[in-house]
Length: 170
Image 1 (cartoon, one colour):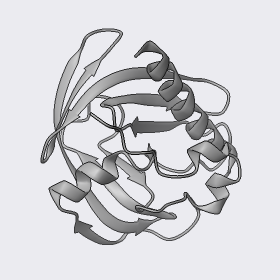
Image 2 (cartoon, rainbow, N blue to C red):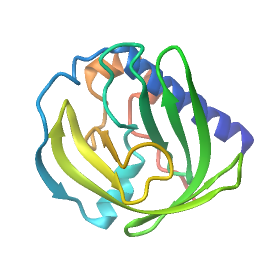
Image 3 (spheres, rainbow, N blue to C red):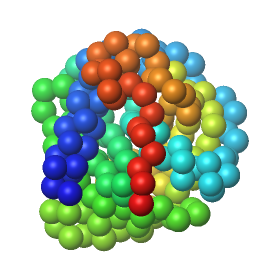
Image 4 (tube, helix red, strand yellow):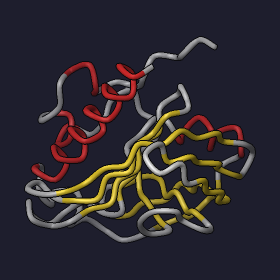
């Protein structure tokens, strides 16, 4: 399990930093359109299929907040930019509309209701809203349930991270 956590951390931090390095191509596009809430079943599936960012950075020094959830019930919260940042690893359980998190370093537990909506904003397709965010802002944005991430993000990532994660067996 330790190895998986370190791998998840490295992958999530790498995704975040590579998105930072990608600049503002997507960030400079249009604002929110739509806002259709997805079903609880679809939300649970979408939660693990995209990195969730508070925004795409305008430059390498622009600080972001990022959440990444994997299918094994582990995740990472990242706050930083291309030059400096920190991360916190957590375990989570997602129910119909609630996330229960346990931050591994401190043992802190948090509960928050969550909702995922389909919308268009700055190149993003989805919005994750947390009713009581334990870290960072209440709204994070992600990419639609695609087999691959957008080309501008994919271009700076290792090939094994550009497709949806394999389904974990329990």
